[in-house]
Image (cartoon, rainbow, N blue to C red; front, side):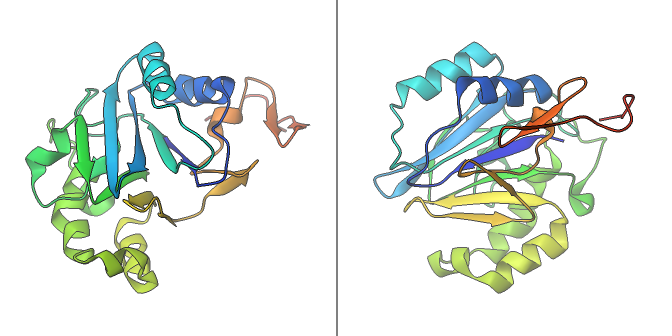
Length: 213
């Protein structure tokens, strides 16, 4: 399923416990992007939680920073560093494999994109293919990043969720995101324990104990 966590400017980072929960439910690698000096800086390819946590700490992130984190469950393209998210917006497939990138726009995705799904493709994920085949053609100028009609077209084509960040630290979320304590999540499956679900301090128990996640 994967999960995207969006921290906008003026919001605190999630706790180490929440980051650990997101990793544990989505253990196929992680990455993040942060806006600095008019660019999006992408760091991805973390295959161990300790490495991801160390990198996040070294960023010295403040409440004024905008940050997007992604934790992956692989569905296509294999479990590897290169297909972790985020990706830089580009028409070049080879760029999708760059682990440390400086970009105008960075993209994280949650879901399965049917139009670019090919389970025989062991090199590139559906997200990487969608970005290079479609998204790069829809977002051509800085103003396109803010265009609601373009965002609707992206959702129409992909039928899934995206968080896109530009160098100003502005973030566009496509699809339904849940807001918890100021943070936005593409889903809340990381909050499910074996028997309980906790959100905003309230605890819920699933009606069916054998609920399949």
